[in-house]
Image 1 (tube, rainbow, N blue to C red):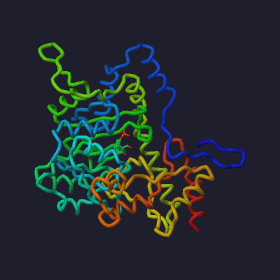
Image 2 (tube, rainbow, N blue to C red):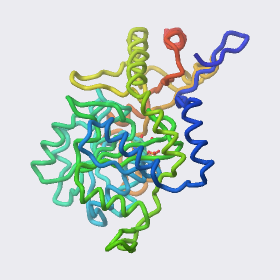
Image 3 (cartoon, protein in one colour):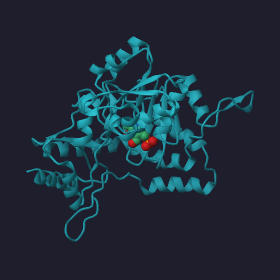
Image 4 (cartoon, rainbow, N blue to C red):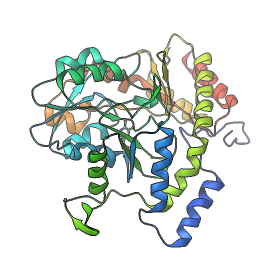
Length: 377
Ligand SMILES: Cc1ncc(COP(=O)(O)O)c(C=O)c1O
């Protein structure tokens, strides 16, 4: 449970990473060696993540989830004149990386039940210029990846999964992030395991894996035992002490996923209110519960509710953005998001992320739910 003041009020941040003394000790031990740049600890982390994802994949650790997505697009040769389909509701990085390579993001509205790209709208968004379809597993819930892959395969278009929030999520028997040409994860402190800033690129294609490994490291390749600069690469490497910090967190991931599911069930049981649309988990998927996100009725003034919750120590956030409604995208492309992407627009305006982390107790969930109920009644 989080701290409690003398008045009985609690301090419940939106999220708090589950970093323990054992994790810190491992990172500190690496710092003492002075060997800080990508090496054996990064390789060990990549091996461990590969096992978590069910094996059979190449994993490359990088400096952020955004770097992971950026490298995936660069490795697939995406550039000016190309279009990349992304959901209209996500964190802006999903679309920013498309802009970064000079391509155009084509936004598709989300399914209001899941906040994930609506596969029923996908076909209509595909043009002769579509080079990638990039669905997001929003808040840790796998999107309808089989339907998306079927449509993408029908057009011969590769899929890159933005699995930033989805380490531990599954779709059927497989891990989210292992379906597409690439899966990209974030190791930001609000994710299931964290290196501070960090990310992971996953692929089952050995040649693409090699390309990512080269691009993250200045374009260096080993040719006949000698280092050669064969690409104009980036420095998107993860450091050794960051990798060491994550490795021991990974061992707690299965337990933490179960615990988050318990907390989410607690919320769902106690927040079953007419003014609140609760998250759903379609059958056959395991939600990673990176975020517990509800959709408030249009009659609820979200800002007032968030202020009132903050006054009793409960931190909330709006969850994710309707990206085409953000100033940059609105200005560049002139979107009318409320009309063009009504579900993403509403999720951005009326969504509310409630505290979710391993440091919360079921009693904290009851405390938060009681306050939400009282404020909405
Ligand atoms: C859906 C999504 N994509 C990409 C990112 C970017 O990840 P990072 O913050 O590690 O760069 C995030 C980060 O929160 C995200 O939620």
